[in-house]
Image 1 (spheres, rainbow, N blue to C red):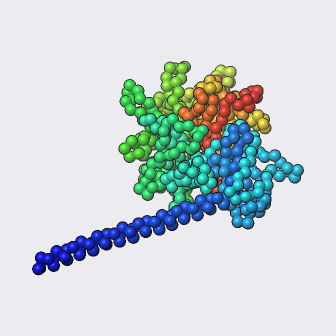
Image 2: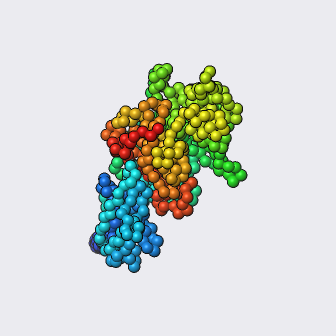
Image 3: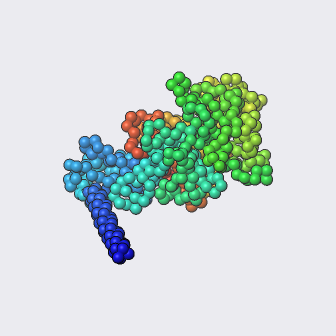
Length: 547
């Protein structure tokens, strides 16, 4: 009898357990259906919101590519900027389904003016409608996209375009300053200066880095960077020595494998300046750094002494002489040298870590007698009084800016200057603030891309030059990029990624209101890198030589 009762109780408990499982499954399915319906409703609502936009696209009349950084302004001064594919997702309560006038402004592009001189167009901003506007490019180079920062294709994402697959932000980076690259161990290494972050006004001031594939096609989308990150997901400082202040990187280069050197070495030069209210921002220390493959950071190899030719005492008018590094085979003495320049080579040394570490091994391009410093120098001349230019050890270099300082101090005659470059538009001497210089296979010449100092904008005008020799002279400067009252500085030619055997080259620089005359930074674009492409077959690059 007792056994039968236990059997009945066990059956009852088992059936109860099954019933509870069935109830849980049904409730779970119902809950999932509710969540799915809620999510689907949210997605539909999101798509519905997207369908409220009027799609406006600005394209290059010649190439049919979307134009980044075009500003459309309404008659009540609302500004809308195109994203990197030329799109604006326009939605403004009170301005939909009506005719809206937009002023059009874009550096290096123009739109036909009307009777009153206005450059603009009226658009009926129909929801889910689309308008395409073609602009004529007036500059030679073509602006193709923003390289860094948040929301590169933000409007394309709102409009459900193909570019919606590109990440809206990478590694919490909002802005990056001044790029340099090198290929090291089958990867392209990218390095930048000060970096803005999402979560706080202060970011990284100890150099930022990332890697990509070495065979990128820069004519397509911006590179997908793999940044070196800290534990918080933001980029980490790559020059981590324990000093508060700004730590910048210069002249990054890969030393190749040789009989003595069995592995590649990635080196660079650091510049340190204290970030203190009691001190100015002049360079206080500089030295040689070597990449550590385990820690993914740089290590200091040596610090150059203050009185070396690499760290000279200098007048205020003399800017730092080196930023771009490259290896070059010098036929005259059958040696390979590491050259540093900014943009033209002013330092050279044998490409070994031992030689580079010791400042007395370096040679400077100069017209001074050996041993000269800026506060104690003598110009070297032959018996006829002609200035002798050449490579000399333990001597400060003569950059273009130093040359002009010597001229102003009556130490050089006009015809004795080594760099004689003139702006063909104004006829005035062209002073370069920064730039690059590399061999080009298409032109079969050395080409230099330089940033003009004090042009039609303070730091926004970019010129193209050619030379048959690594050491110049440089002729026929032609303006290829312009910016109105905005800086585009530290321009970098990605010579390793040229297309069509050097016919198409890519130029990147920092777009910032810093040093400019504008007080209103461009949203998203400001303090970020912008890419241009230049077709070297353009007939405008074959103008008659002017000097």
